[in-house]
Length: 147
Image 1 (tube, rainbow, N blue to C red):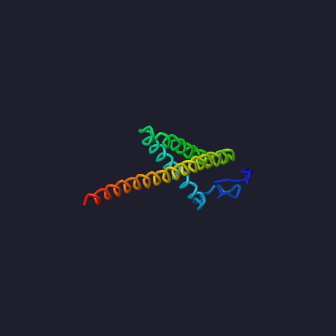
Image 2: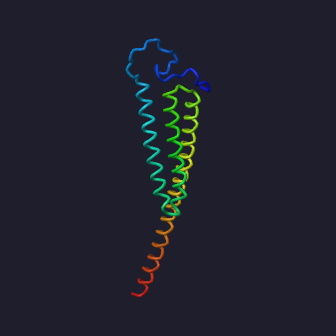
Image 3: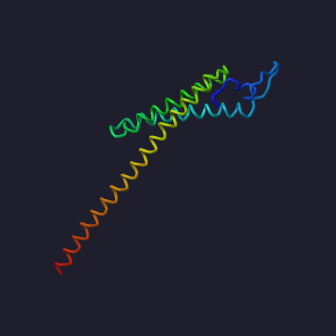
């Protein structure tokens, strides 16, 4: 899979050049490829905007800045895939996959951080509730001694 030289988007990805100048309807691969790049652009814009909103708070900036970089990477990957679609340059396809891999690496790190924060949140909630119930139980015992 290292060699992308034989991949062509115009003929459905088989690498054979068509000799006919007539119109050919787009193949299913070409339509999915166009939809993929459009979805990647939308996701990139969404992540950039949501990362910017997260950066409005100091604590949110810890998560917001990587989300912005994640959005930038997926948009750059979509640009490279579109470049490959128009020029059939195998280097553009390779760069698109590399940028997409960076996007997924950042996303994996953010998911791990989210899981850790959720676990920490539940631990804090359990500790606060146990302290609250403990003090409530102690107050209840003191009231029972007054009777």
